[in-house]
Amino acid sequence: MRVATLGSGSRGNSVFVECGRTRFLVDAGFSGSEIARRLDLLGVAPESIQAIVVTHEHRDHTAGVGIAARRWHWPLYLTPATERACLSLLRGVETVRHYEGEVPFELGEVRIHPSSTCHDAADPVALTILDPDSGLKLGVATDLGRATTPVRNALAGCNFVVLESNHDEIMLRESPYPWSVKQRIGGSRGHLSNRLAADLAADLLHPALGGFLLAHLSDECNAPSAAMQQARKRLARKGYRGMVDVAPQDRPSPLYDVAALVDVARNGGPQLRLFS
Image (tube, rainbow, N blue to C red; front, side):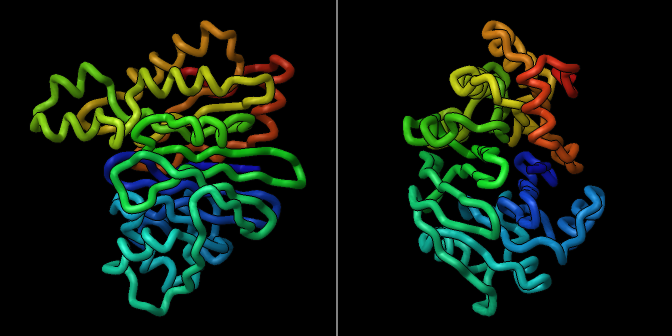
């Protein structure tokens, strides 16, 4: 299992996942040309992608879903409510495959479990992706609002988690945003703060958890160093030995080999990109 973000933040989000012969994207919040450019930086041909799994309709997650589905004939996996919310992006010629929250489905060689979140969208979900051959489990959990019990249960046992760490609470309070926007971002239907993300990460720890990739950082109300420091302090108290990294907005992240990271976490080898 390998995973990378093509970019993550308020200006676009997409996650590349590879399990055996199965390759797909979770969300596509960039233009078609930008998706192709960023996949090329990872050494991935767009023609090798088999689908896009859409978590919700907000444009930073869906800006490129229509053009990419038409250009490369990628099927779109999304809930009926999310499809209705995305109609302006679609022309009716795309291949659409519906899924329902809390109902697992198959995509190629993997099993995907969507879990409904509290985010202020039509039908938002977090995803866990299980590779039956290796037994490895990946979590993609951004735009959470708050970490509900179903989402926590779904993420339990993950070997790698792409986890929202959207804002620093002090930076949000001191930002120039109107009060209504601050309430929306920091509320239970908005985004996880660095503090809440670190708490959730600590709750998810187990010996075979190989890494966290902190994602969806706010340009205005966060900094990679702030998100990293909050996670580092919280996880260090529990003796965590795996990887922690921050997903950049303007370029792809490294392509992480989940099995290798799990081996490091289990055996105490050299830590990879730890708190860099």
